[in-house]
Image (cartoon, rainbow, N blue to C red; front, side):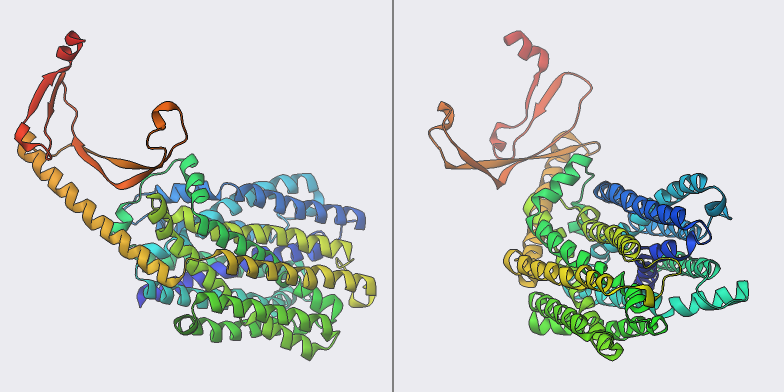
Length: 554
């Protein structure tokens, strides 16, 4: 119970952070950060900072598999994941609070210096956020290998993340208004209010990261012991060879881009299209209620329907929500109904994807012989950050091109602006989501049943290999004395499916390795003597010779 609560609280703060960075930071940039500068210079800085955010995040995303490899290769008494959750959580939270400020007025007095400082702080933010993000979600397989317990942990974590993400939308407007009034004495959405909003999110995010590091325990198992240190090249090879990971990743990135494109602009929708910014908090409330209902339903629905069907129904619900948005006009009630239908299945879709990616850890181990927990699970955070980065740029693009910046109001937005807004925010995302569903149904075959079969086979392999190694070690100690500083080797056998009699004549051959092979144990000597013993030819006894003897006989 302690572990579930700790993991849930960590997810709560984590998604608060993600929603703030990916959905609302650019709104702060476009509305208040450069307020007071000449209009042309303000627009230039808004476009420049928005572009910088996208570029920095996209560049950093390319290193996510490497970060996953660093985490996989971490070995401390606290585990491989918890140190990065704590360190990344604290540092990235401090950086978040800083970017919601004007750097002590520098943004208005020296835009060049502000830009330099912003680049430094944002690179630090994005790097340490990546370490925390990847470590947090990659820790799930380390907490348990049981499929049902994984679903329970994932469910409580997603419940926490649902509340965290939704609470940002629910409370952002009143928090900003409250602190603006407290600091300036004026009502509205001032820069000081935005800063304290960022500060609150930073404190909660950093604090809950520490709680997760304290309250969880990474379990050691035979399957996890198979994991090994990986180089950068091996990291990318392991991803490329895991076909189910690649297909679910493509499915999710299409879904995430479409979802972020819509959710990150809903505040603009309420402010400039519906002229109902005060009602925007209802979006967060609806999202929180939807998550509270949907997340606990996930394990029940999966048990009765399977993840495949749950994912399919979820995407279809969201497409229906898009249809309501397009036909609702300025009817606030109809829009809220559409939001409820749109938001309700999101947690179900996310959990379906998360559990499939989690199962791809064992799938990759089964297929490639190497277990890469953090590398495999780095894909989901990587895709979220890619979608978030594109979402940052998307919000900036829409805000500037539609005139939704600075002191603009709903009255100043034209009908053509509204039509373009709906095309980019509702129509195109609906098409992309439909494409994601087609890929999922046609390419993903890593079902719950298939995963259970893979885990069973992997455990059988571990038992077989451990018995063989134990026998080898015992015999080595018997024949050569002790087993210190020994190395173990396995050379797989091979069979030719094609070309049995053409391989020695440069013909076409199709060979495959088998799980049957030769296992050996060896230890380095300080002299040139070689001593050999075979358990398959015990009647031969110990065979000894010196390398110098071989040299003389050649």
